[in-house]
Amino acid sequence: MKTILDAQHLLGAVVYSGLGAAVFFAWFVIFDKLTPYDLWNEIIAKQNRALATVMAGLSVAMGLIIAASMLG
Image (tube, rainbow, N blue to C red; front, side, top):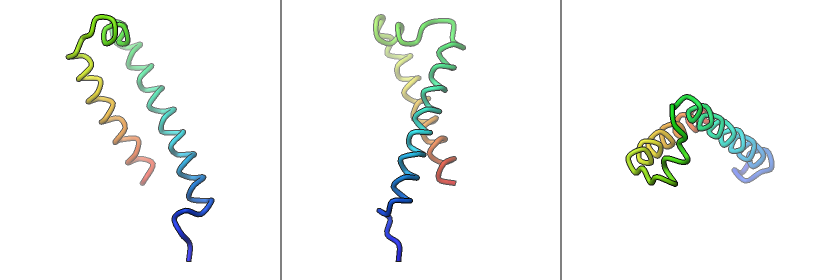
């Protein structure tokens, strides 16, 4: 009987986690390029809480989509 902590499952989890992080980072960069302003500057320097809340919601949604697509 196989356990969930065998090398194959652990390697798959690491690979898919890395892939998910890369896709999420690429999504954020593309979204930043599509907006007419610099997201990082708006959130950090100008402390735009409304934009930070929108980005947090989009980040959670995108993370759920990536996780669901990798789990099948």
